[in-house]
Length: 436
Image 1 (cartoon, rainbow, N blue to C red):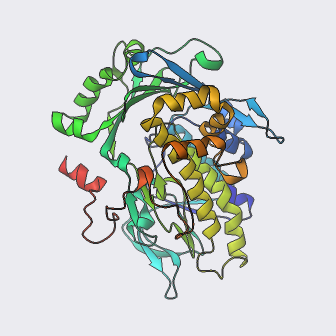
Image 2 (cartoon, rainbow, N blue to C red):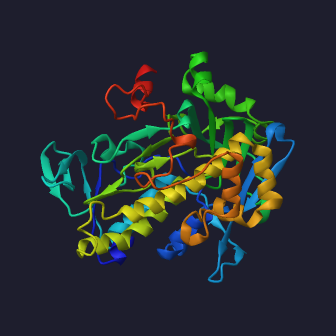
Image 3 (cartoon, rainbow, N blue to C red):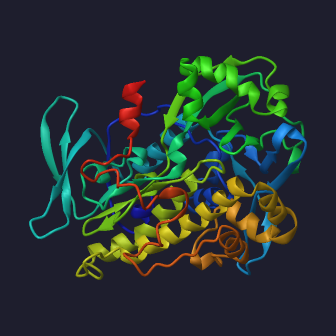
């Protein structure tokens, strides 16, 4: 839709028919602002998606909690209260795809099977397998990888290497539940459709996200070693361990009435280097993903799409095409933004008490910005809060080497090989699921 605003008529190559199940139901404040800029606010209201006023985090044993409200910034950079939405992703994604087609995009059903490279370097398109089994080359001046965790261009080694992060030792189990108990308020901290995060201890937590008037998305995240040790099916593990996380969750789910099968996502923390180049850009999860605890995945994808669209127009007009990486500045800006999120999430896990103090008393406005998804340099980032996080984590960020910060933190271990390097010791999601 942003490409269409730039006068570019894109072709969407989609392997799966919509609607289809997908995780990621909670939209941040800046996700909502992107949707408003696309003119979709009335459509969101018409679909009666649950209204999210904020995020409430319950501490161990539910003995304490803290709350971050949804807010936006006006033209003078003043905070004001706002709302966003919780969505059933099957419906939301289907709506977004149909809206793009209605506005002028072309949708083709097919599977990209191979990246096509130019002799002089750069990507010239993809080889496609159509539903009838025939194969065809699609040439494109710009190819956007929106394949999410499938990381198509990384798999094809068009990008730089893909690195797994330390969060790859966790596994997420999730389903939809009927009959869960919500709060009864109409706004603020006790609004009935807010996101709840229920903390147990490091790397053990659950989420509670309303997706319609009757259904709540419930997720459980735990070290995968716990799951492997018990030798249970995903549903057996989910049904048992969900109720060991936090008594507040037990109170809200008097009976576990599943409306969806139990899904599993292991090894979800990674970074793809060199995700932009001649003729291609990777967006959102197709180049990087960190711990999903604060629901940033959709936000990052939407915001990167908005940032990329005018640059793609410039590229097609020949204004930035002659450089080795015409989208280099975009690549750096995206990395810096996600680094800000990563430092915030790492501090949450390493020093939760200090994190809660920052939220409530020391940096409430800066933390509100970060939770909303205002993470880029143009939005006064890194803020004093992010700098404080880095100081407590004994971490520095420098972008002098290969356009990336020094590889530290959750996403990378210097002693470990890249996922796509020969003889890599890193265990892939596919290997792990195959073993299961």
